[in-house]
Image (tube, helix red, strand yellow):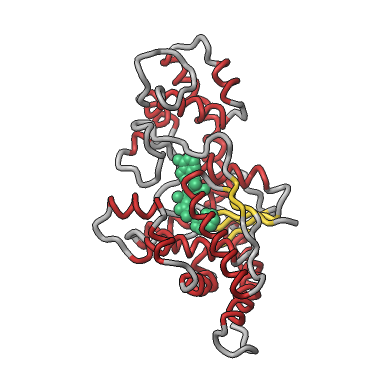
Length: 331
Ligand code: TYM
């Protein structure tokens, strides 16, 4: 059975963009593939974190995966930092990737321009992501468009390594949704909806209350045209709301446009807000139930032993191929 794998950073609160670009895709494919979903907490510390908040967010992220419908019996859940093979493999891969290759990563360029303290971890982060993927021989990696370049780097690293040391890694393929690969900020629909946005009004968090959601959607930036149709260049705000509606209701854009044909913006926004609320309310109810149960511990315990076995084997194969340590010494 082919394997699918993805992860969402526990940096702050998960957003509607994370749900549509990341979680919903795993949900879609979990019946078809051997499905792995993890919490890449080591990625989060590339930017300074409050340790208490970080730990809370790790657990909250697992609870949200489960609440969003990631099936505990069809998925393997784990926390990246609890398995040391990720960092070990990442180091070996770092020694097999060019500085120039990493310098071309657009996310690094964007993030480093905004930060004063740019850490080395922020620079090498895509290699850790490659290790996350290659350690488990994942065939497919579902993500939003922002992570596509990183998955492509993982492909390049795998191909290069295979050429140099013989067939070792599965070359992964990104799966980017046709619709909803980049949900935009409601206040500035020219930028991605992001956990780390400066203005929270532009971001729908999965745990936002009904009132907050209504307010945020009502104040979403649109245009003066008052015609609901998709035109991402000239009407980015409306196009974004249409995309959200279409994704949450499993519609194509044309059908979503048809649905809102005779709507004014006020009524259009109300219906989009209700649709978000209808999606998030059951998730929130389950989330709070799960947080107060043993389910998180149970899935992490099962996941840990499974991933340890798989990654130990792959890491030792790699370590032997590059000539580290003693050949008969299994770490
Ligand atoms: P992260 O935590 O930034 O985002 C998690 C997932 O959500 C998607 N996403 C979006 N999709 C649509 N619209 C948006 N506005 C939006 N914002 C985020 C992302 O594309 C992603 O799929 N480096 C990764 C985490 C990671 C990972 C991995 C993912 C670490 N190792 C291995 C896959 C495989 C990240 O920072 O995603």
